[in-house]
Amino acid sequence: MLRSRETSIRLHTLGWALLAVLFLLGLPLLLGISPLVPAVVFALGALLAAGLWWIALRVRGRTRTRRALGAAALTGGMLLTGLLSLPLYWLVLQPALNPLLMPRVTMTDGRRTLVFQGMTHIGSALFYRSVAFDLMPAREAGSVLYFEGVLGGTPDAKAWFDAAVGAGDGLNEDYARIARVCGLHFQNDFLDALIRDSGPHPERTVDADVSETEMMIEWQRLVAQQPQLGEALARAHADAGDGPSGLDRMADMLGRVGPRQQPFVGAACRGVITYALGRPESPDVLNPVVLDFRNRKLAERVVASTADDLYLVYGAGHLPGFVRELRRLDPAWTISGATWSTAIQSPDHGVGRLQVDADAMLPVPR
Image (cartoon, rainbow, N blue to C red; front, top):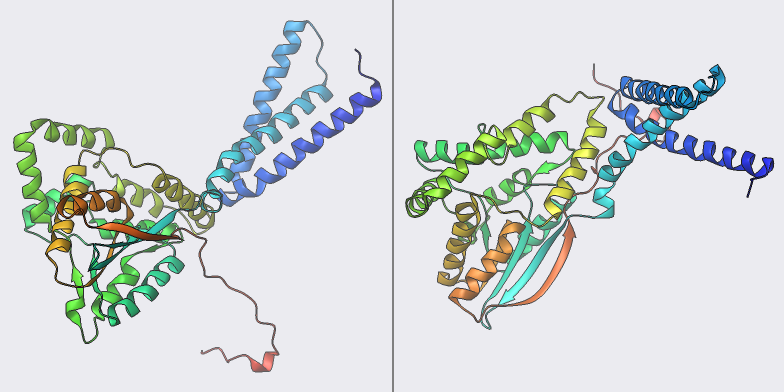
């Protein structure tokens, strides 16, 4: 059935309207990267569409017109600008669409109580403040706080650990550098002050982690039993360039971001972290020491503790393995409750405008 001229006009108008909306959605996002980006993208789309249109006309044996060629170029430029922004919007919206949730799990063996607060190394200030707000009264009420934090070791152990995880500048330094560009915070910015200010009961604040030396010795023991582990780590280094985690490379790349690009890169970075940490954890060659060994030692420490109430502040990735190890040592431990909190949110800082009389403003120091 042939469409009427009126129907064709309506469909044509609707198509241009949708294209314009798509273009206007993409334009500000690409401008946030650089003013040159939308210009380059638009030009590329226009050239590609015009070229395809010209080839199609030649194949059909039709003559080309400037008006048709211009319309094709305009369509291609607007379409590529809009389409390119869609995955970027999806990434930027991840913290809102699929928030990264951290568990707060309560366990009991019928006599003692244990709270496991899941953590992420990089997160929002609001999340870390809420954790600290819960920790301080818990410690005052008598709970012993167990903190994650790999302890130092011998120079050889430190060199092995930094090389193994691909953090030449040290894990903490890399986390802090990445967090600044992403508009987030490194967890130690908040927890270090809480640990230092242990109050009248320093025995209730404990670094319950293992040391770099212990981890190196455990790795050497495992490699002696399973030589393929050493080969797998060497392959991971070769594939990643600077180690399995690639933190140094990521920190260096983000460090080159200029102030104009920072808002966009920060939003995209929060989306990447939300998406990456929200996925099921993939196997890693270092998991036998980075996760399994530390979970086992933490469970042994909990079982050996005489405290009635324990409050563990550990990475959320440790929770499944820790619960498994704890119940292996003492099946009486069961989960009695769980709550969740969002770890990645938009930055909570900004600059507003005070609506007050000029006379009320403080003088600016000179």
